[in-house]
Length: 238
Image (tube, rainbow, N blue to C red; front, side, top):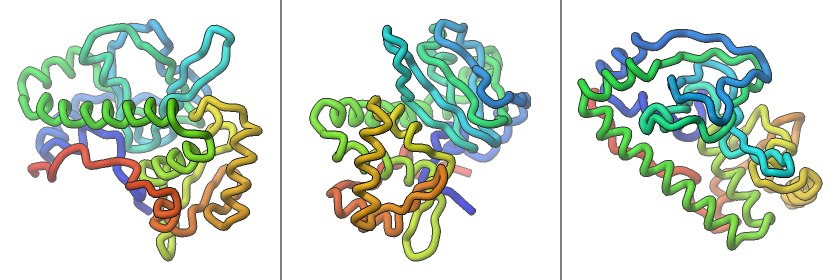
């Protein structure tokens, strides 16, 4: 079953021959559940493609409160920004369950980047898209209530990680109310209260670590929102 939306993957928007060249330079790595792939302050010496599993990217406040800033699943790339600018890691990346990675070392990335101009061209578009999404998240945080922000987060998760089901439904799996609270930077009890209201009016159905949105189009119309992610580029050249 395919995901409902686009992945966070800069490699897939390259031409097929170049994509194959990059994959050939990558090496496999298996990481146990709950392990750090990297921690804040670590050298940015490699970037990653998730073959299977999940990565939580988090930061911590001075009081120790955890805020989850990103959630990556199988087929997603992460860690490329540090490889590009050479600065130390600015966040922490932890596995959720055993996770299989493909790893590209910085010297290999730099060599491929200099040899193939297409990488820079497509990465520019990809990172601009990521910046737009980050700007939108900051704006939502400053002007929207939790009751407005939660449906937008669910829409983005459905678009990026959801699995299509019958009659326009989308299933978001391996997600808990605690995960949603970390992503939104609020208490789990607040998320629980709001998501139960969404369930009461029939906009979502809750199962163990799974959220079903019965009709994603109606869900978005209800909250006057567009699709959670926009294309990062036009069709790639094979």
